[in-house]
Length: 125
Image 1 (tube, rainbow, N blue to C red):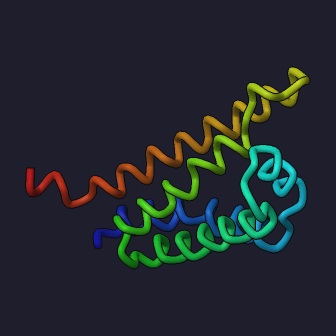
Image 2: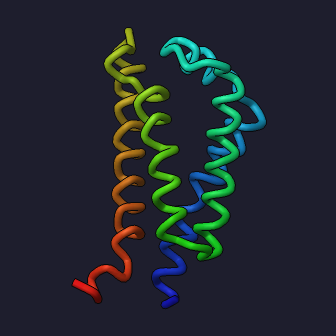
Protein backbone atom coordinates (compact mmCIF):
# COMPACT_ATOMS: atom_id res chain seq x y z
CA UNK A 1 0.00 0.00 0.00
CA UNK A 2 1.45 3.41 -0.92
CA UNK A 3 2.63 5.54 2.00
CA UNK A 4 0.05 8.29 1.43
CA UNK A 5 -2.80 5.78 1.54
CA UNK A 6 -1.37 4.19 4.70
CA UNK A 7 -1.14 7.61 6.35
CA UNK A 8 -4.72 8.44 5.34
CA UNK A 9 -5.99 5.18 6.85
CA UNK A 10 -4.00 5.77 10.02
CA UNK A 11 -5.35 9.32 10.40
CA UNK A 12 -8.93 8.15 9.80
CA UNK A 13 -8.48 5.46 12.45
CA UNK A 14 -7.59 7.85 15.28
CA UNK A 15 -11.10 9.16 15.91
CA UNK A 16 -12.51 5.63 16.04
CA UNK A 17 -9.89 4.36 18.45
CA UNK A 18 -10.21 7.35 20.79
CA UNK A 19 -13.98 7.83 20.59
CA UNK A 20 -14.72 4.13 20.62
CA UNK A 21 -12.57 3.50 23.67
CA UNK A 22 -14.29 6.35 25.53
CA UNK A 23 -17.72 4.98 24.65
CA UNK A 24 -16.72 1.49 25.73
CA UNK A 25 -14.98 2.45 28.97
CA UNK A 26 -17.23 5.37 29.99
CA UNK A 27 -20.64 5.07 28.32
CA UNK A 28 -21.98 7.96 30.46
CA UNK A 29 -24.62 10.19 28.85
CA UNK A 30 -24.55 8.16 25.66
CA UNK A 31 -26.65 5.49 27.39
CA UNK A 32 -29.50 7.94 28.01
CA UNK A 33 -29.48 9.11 24.38
CA UNK A 34 -29.60 5.51 23.16
CA UNK A 35 -32.38 4.60 25.63
CA UNK A 36 -34.40 7.64 24.54
CA UNK A 37 -34.66 6.31 20.98
CA UNK A 38 -35.85 2.92 22.22
CA UNK A 39 -32.78 0.79 21.57
CA UNK A 40 -32.90 -2.19 23.96
CA UNK A 41 -30.03 -2.73 26.42
CA UNK A 42 -28.72 0.79 25.82
CA UNK A 43 -25.53 0.45 27.87
CA UNK A 44 -24.63 -2.77 26.09
CA UNK A 45 -25.43 -1.14 22.74
CA UNK A 46 -23.09 1.78 23.51
CA UNK A 47 -20.32 -0.58 24.59
CA UNK A 48 -20.69 -2.85 21.55
CA UNK A 49 -20.68 0.17 19.25
CA UNK A 50 -17.60 1.55 21.00
CA UNK A 51 -15.77 -1.78 20.84
CA UNK A 52 -16.59 -2.15 17.13
CA UNK A 53 -15.19 1.30 16.48
CA UNK A 54 -11.97 0.49 18.36
CA UNK A 55 -11.53 -2.80 16.50
CA UNK A 56 -12.40 -1.19 13.18
CA UNK A 57 -10.09 1.75 13.85
CA UNK A 58 -7.19 -0.54 14.70
CA UNK A 59 -7.83 -2.69 11.63
CA UNK A 60 -8.06 0.36 9.37
CA UNK A 61 -4.92 1.89 10.86
CA UNK A 62 -3.02 -1.34 10.29
CA UNK A 63 -4.38 -1.76 6.76
CA UNK A 64 -6.25 -4.99 7.57
CA UNK A 65 -9.07 -5.50 5.07
CA UNK A 66 -9.49 -1.74 4.68
CA UNK A 67 -12.56 -1.79 2.44
CA UNK A 68 -14.46 -4.21 4.66
CA UNK A 69 -13.35 -2.30 7.73
CA UNK A 70 -14.48 1.01 6.22
CA UNK A 71 -17.91 -0.47 5.50
CA UNK A 72 -18.16 -1.73 9.09
CA UNK A 73 -17.17 1.67 10.45
CA UNK A 74 -19.75 3.44 8.29
CA UNK A 75 -22.41 1.08 9.62
CA UNK A 76 -21.34 1.87 13.19
CA UNK A 77 -21.03 5.61 12.57
CA UNK A 78 -24.46 6.21 11.03
CA UNK A 79 -26.52 5.46 14.18
CA UNK A 80 -23.85 7.14 16.32
CA UNK A 81 -24.25 10.30 14.26
CA UNK A 82 -28.03 10.31 14.22
CA UNK A 83 -28.54 9.39 17.89
CA UNK A 84 -25.48 11.02 19.40
CA UNK A 85 -25.51 14.31 17.53
CA UNK A 86 -29.20 15.06 17.06
CA UNK A 87 -28.72 18.83 16.82
CA UNK A 88 -32.39 19.29 15.93
CA UNK A 89 -33.30 18.16 19.46
CA UNK A 90 -31.02 20.61 21.24
CA UNK A 91 -32.73 23.32 23.27
CA UNK A 92 -29.92 25.87 23.43
CA UNK A 93 -28.22 27.62 20.54
CA UNK A 94 -24.79 26.64 21.88
CA UNK A 95 -25.85 22.99 22.19
CA UNK A 96 -27.32 23.04 18.70
CA UNK A 97 -24.13 24.52 17.20
CA UNK A 98 -21.91 22.02 19.01
CA UNK A 99 -23.97 19.07 17.84
CA UNK A 100 -24.10 20.44 14.27
CA UNK A 101 -20.29 20.55 14.26
CA UNK A 102 -20.08 16.97 15.54
CA UNK A 103 -22.72 15.83 13.04
CA UNK A 104 -20.83 17.50 10.16
CA UNK A 105 -17.53 16.03 11.39
CA UNK A 106 -19.03 12.56 11.29
CA UNK A 107 -20.37 13.16 7.78
CA UNK A 108 -16.85 14.17 6.74
CA UNK A 109 -15.42 11.01 8.27
CA UNK A 110 -18.03 8.95 6.43
CA UNK A 111 -16.83 10.69 3.26
CA UNK A 112 -13.27 9.60 4.01
CA UNK A 113 -14.44 6.05 4.64
CA UNK A 114 -16.32 6.08 1.32
CA UNK A 115 -13.01 6.96 -0.36
CA UNK A 116 -11.48 3.90 1.32
CA UNK A 117 -14.37 1.81 -0.04
CA UNK A 118 -13.68 3.18 -3.51
CA UNK A 119 -9.98 2.25 -3.40
CA UNK A 120 -9.11 -0.21 -6.11
CA UNK A 121 -12.46 0.14 -7.85
CA UNK A 122 -11.19 2.82 -10.22
CA UNK A 123 -8.78 0.31 -11.77
CA UNK A 124 -11.58 -2.08 -12.71
CA UNK A 125 -13.94 0.63 -13.99
